[in-house]
Image (cartoon, rainbow, N blue to C red; front, top):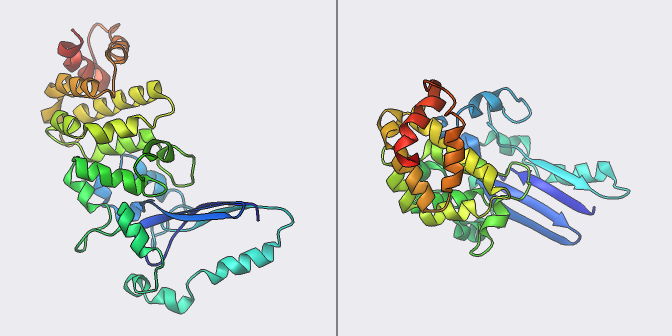
Length: 284
């Protein structure tokens, strides 16, 4: 076995993926992002429910998206032996029947280390993502980044870890989309300014900042025209754009280019027209 990569469902951690990696003799098992089933559906990005429920390989009625997917690469592998060793890692039928409370009581050699990296379950009966549902704050965004990271997001290696291509991993644009779609509220412009450090940290991870800026402008459009807070936010579009420019997530040139895309229309129509019309005080 030369290489292994993927993610796993640990019985003792039903709210969070475990990311696995083997290269040569170096093996790591690190905390990953939350399972979607551990996050209230009201906080899911638009379209995710339909996507997951339509894919029987990624979603089950009983366990949601919790599963293990490992890719093994090697030479002259004994596939039967590998399968037997992996099967030894799974719960027995009797253990499965015990349910989550009994699973979480099993020995967990990773608990102390992972809890210290931000992977612990929040106090009370909330899921690992419940505190994020309170809205965008520096603390909730820092927690989200840690949960989405492959290794707890140690200081100094934040950005590059987020953008690694890993099964089940969240890319920067998707993570920003979740923040705009599920965490920003009626005071979105203030929240953006308050979370400057965390948002800049994510933006710095982008492998294509131009594409990320276009994605952000799309998220702004949806936030102010088609969200639960849209009625109060459309008029604050200039303030939201200014806040994003002030913290370096957008450039004025990117906003002008985006705004010009709709300038050919004599009368703005639809969401794109509404948001561009609302943005005119900032563009002017």
